[in-house]
Amino acid sequence: MSSASREIEMTKKIAPLDLTNAVNDILQEYGDEVYTALSESIDEVTTEAVDTLKGVRTFASDGHATGAYADSWTKTTEMTKRLSVKTTVHNEEHYQLTHLLEKGHAKQNGGRTRAFPHIAPANDKAQRDVFRKIEEKLK
Image (cartoon, rainbow, N blue to C red; front, side, top):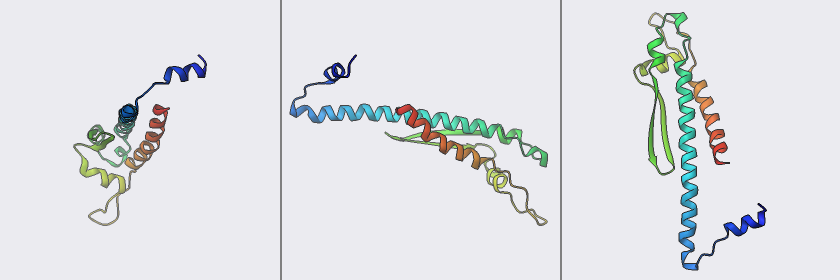
């Protein structure tokens, strides 16, 4: 189909009084597409982040029981506004350990424990991936 025939098919006569409604309909449709791309991309990226964090078992060599800690990573999604999606990846049961393991902490008898950075790399990857996925879906 030539571009000229596509233009003819897409051409629609609108009365001046109906212009506002026609523009609103177009914006509504685009907003729906953006919202779908946004929510799907965020869901995919956060699911990947949860899976990454559930796969981390690097603390076992230091005597930490990692199974319960790793397995309790989850995500919570909240649709706050029409074009706003808030998703939080968190450790549901062992949230007290996240900062201590990520950054290390002072020992009772002096010194510090070793830090196990596992949240920051997952967060950095998620932030990079989410924009790429949204762009791909909107093209």
